[in-house]
Length: 371
Image (cartoon, rainbow, N blue to C red; front, side, top):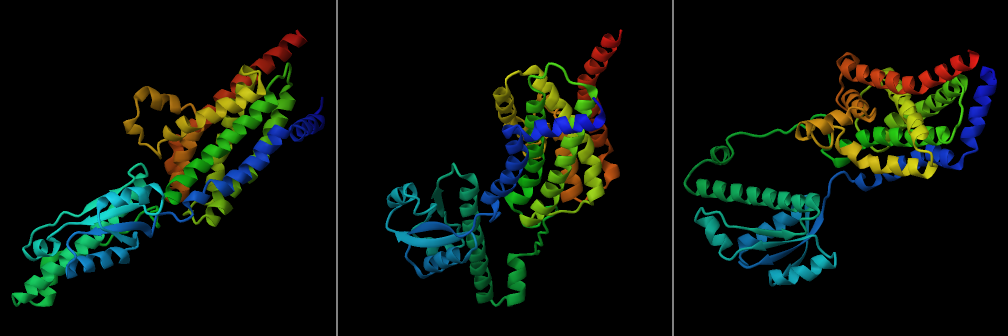
């Protein structure tokens, strides 16, 4: 079988397998559209809260208006007691409740710190944390206003009173994640994992159940998959990130240098998976079940220093682990390609190792046949 015939056979095999076609083309496109969708707004804003005002003073009403003015909160109702909040939270009418204590105004005048209670569904930690953030912002602003007013009543100039309350100004500049959003943080790494998992399934299904494969056919299959996934990679790490407003800094050539060994290693690993697991449906199941462990051991969702050493070492056998680290540092953090020499060496070692385990038996079989 010559090279042209090998490529034709492999192309027909790929496009005649509905599971492979859907995984490679449908899965990639669907994931790129659906996965970033929940993070389109990046951060929760205007969360609906109810307020229980036990003080009912002028200052407590000012505090409630300040709560409503924060970007985190939207005061939708005032309740007479905290017990009424439970049914509203259960019916998803509000996300939290804020209780202003009795003698709120008096404690402020006396220089004491009144305790404002915050309640909500803490199972959604990001939502609960945003409510607390809004209450702290409003409380800090009100406290600063009261302290400044008291200082001015003691004949302290406004400029000096403001400096006494806040002796320094804080200018927060987010690095690598300009919006401080969850999408910018998680989407780039997950996209690499999606590329790996779909390619594992595709190469595994194509190699599953083969009794004999020539070297030319395997090389032709690898070339075809690399060509297809090179286009998918450009879409995922370029256009798709731009569409979702994710920071992108790397040059295409830098990403190509990382992606080539990543794709080769993944194809080799998927082919081995297809030879070990003889049932096609089991390949998809195994790959899907491995997705969450691979995500949490890749080093960007959970720090590797907090992982058991044996688990961290096991994670290094997955091409996605060094590829995620390299692409995030290049594309989101503006690192140089020279700084990724360690990750590149690891990816090429995985590529040589996995492809070698596939090709060596093919060379051995052909040599024995000739003998």
